[in-house]
Length: 316
Image 1 (tube, helix red, strand yellow):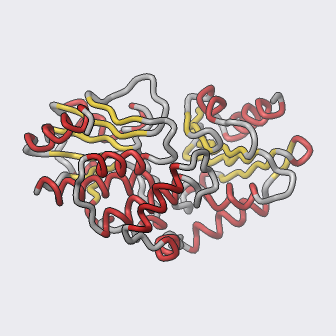
Image 2 (image 1 turned 90 degrees about the vertical axis):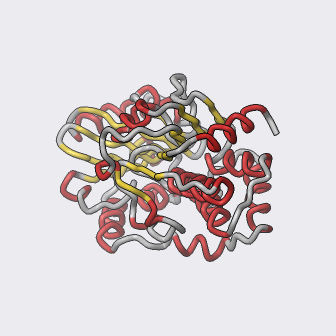
């Protein structure tokens, strides 16, 4: 067991109140990792952390074990102080959003993350940008610490791994399959867990499929572009993954961009690539993410942002 794990154990043992959070608008890795770590602490330290989130948790994640334990940040007293705050899969400080005030007010901060971040928040860091999901880091620490892991934790870690690898489409290293195999050996049922994720609302699917139908193509078909205006965005629950996945299946498409008008002059941009790393492009727009799946939020009208991003691609 390394020294950082020993420090973590000591901090958990001495903490009277613990909170856990991920990035705003939780995805499967942030939600699964946070809930898994919450349950690990309950089982092994007889303490129940508060899991606090900001933004939206999409309906397709509603079947995650312990999902009902998540507490929206506006329901937490603003002056609440935590001895120990654990951040999982948070990305960068700006992605903390409504939980940032609690993090800054905490006595000690621990982070688990697999995103590149040149301005870390944690006092103690378990970060590894080579991992495909934050859940892998938590799983590794749990094994090294010899912590008890039950069926809920196994399922949550597996769901986090499934979602953040796009059902294993974005795997770069073999350790993903090693971890997946170990989770299956411990009881994870891949078929059952994948089916838990088939839980979108009708209106979301209709918005996503309409967006695919109306997609535009540039660069001789290499760039596929979907656009969701604010009226339709209000019906969207999640990030529009179906749009990205369907457009990526088209022959000849190498890049997919999805524009989402969050509100007037604030546009979310999701980027996907089959061949060229896309994270540096997202970073140039003030965002970030993984090598082949990234995103950003840009200020400007929908038309202005579309033109700006498409021109960058056409210059690649």
